[in-house]
Length: 452
Image (cartoon, rainbow, N blue to C red; front, side):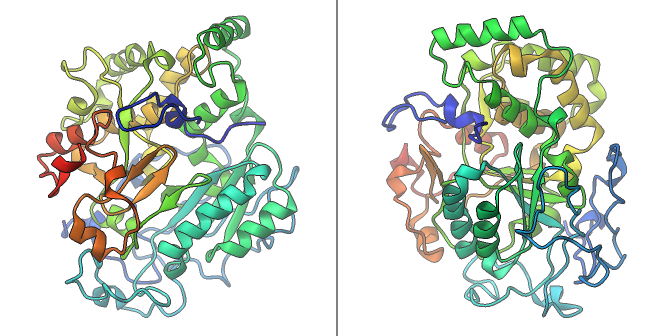
């Protein structure tokens, strides 16, 4: 068995206000609006790395997207897709749904506030284009009812109007119950993938005896999941392989969803469009400090990468989010990766892959207990421009034990939120979100002082 838990939730330690530890521009060619029936071209398209067995790239700007009739035949969900020995059908690039008439984008601006057209239109299918995007979930068969809760949260608050696809990944074949339940709940197409053994096992350069002794030591020190092999495979997979799964190869954006999460507010706009139209590559809703005993040498490995690959480091990066002394030491801040909306093209780019492979060869996923959250966060903080990282302030979210709830009262009323603002983690002492605001010169929302 493996643990689907994000590394950060097990890295939580008692914090103020917590009840203890818990497991677990317009004008830019890349940002121009796309007519329905086309697939937006990724700004990273020229930097992508081709992988063995990779499918043909998605259609570029101006190319007609594949239609349902043009797409290769796919197995219906629940009829063996993702079973052992199957070669899963690769999803066609996501296309606009029925009713998206040509030229509709100009008539379907993003409804970001109550004054925007379409704000109150929360019934039926949302107008406008669809980005080439999917939800993605790593889960076990026994997680079916917990992931069912999450799907209903996402569908009720957002996806019932947008019908985006959903990719499920597992290191064991999904059973029929999991596929039937999840397919019945998702408004978009569902796809089920079996993770290749080489993406869920020890690489050949790992010293097994050294790794075993580390697990024993962490067990003695009571570091949560410190003795788990499967947890380490999960963290390595989420850091370097989920975006290279065959089922993911034709998508440009992903939204990660884990079991038993909650969304507290209506989502009136398409977050994938926000990412695309504003050239955002990575996003978050919660940030916090990492448990240092799990990553004692991660920053040393990062500094080695920076020395070996200065060409990959952005000149306008977010180092001040990650370090208080100009990069000498890591301050442990990271984005909580159990919620993230991001660019798959960026994760497949040479800078990110070089970063992951450098860390992977150092062995810290197994000789320590490196998690995917600090790996993603450090990569985003160093390889991206700081304006390419986005904070979804109005996507209210809960994953045990932390809550992100919009700070401003009027905003919560406008979004029909049902979260308790007293539980908002953003401005607590163990949150790093204040650092993100300061780095980007952002004004903190009205009322934040009351939530500190």
